[in-house]
Length: 209
Image (cartoon, rainbow, N blue to C red):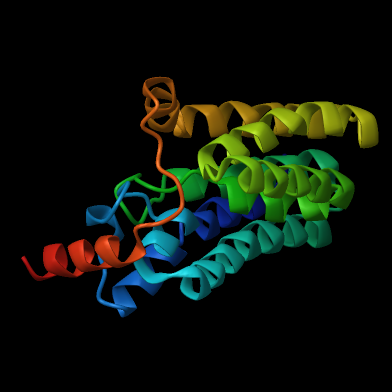
């Protein structure tokens, strides 16, 4: 891997680490680490601040994946480097260097990457995510279902070793980052949509303490 490729991967990691949700929520007086699940991703933002703010955060997280993948594609024209940058930006989101290696789940950022690598894989996984959310009202179930679909979809539409490896990594990463959600699912205690006002009030109170 040459210097340009290394630079692209490093850039992707640090870009992925930008905590969009945390920054946006703090501007609204809410500390996401002290609200709801304590996660900095879209779902917790929606609980604390509503759908409009959550959508803004979601778009920001998707954009991180898009930008990192596009930079890799433009600079190197190399699928292995593109896949490495995709893995790096999602890893950065999950373990941010700006937050002492805390972070989110990486689902939205993964979507951004996949839309560049192969838009068919990204859109079909996203469609599955929407369908499962509508049916179950549980975001973690939808995220895990979408993660499971990545490897089969990549095998159908873009069966190259770099993409297969990347989608396999993203799937494993999604399950690892959702381990607490999986435990709650097994206990029948996983969060559903709702509770926005209470979460926001709790967050504001904790921010003041």
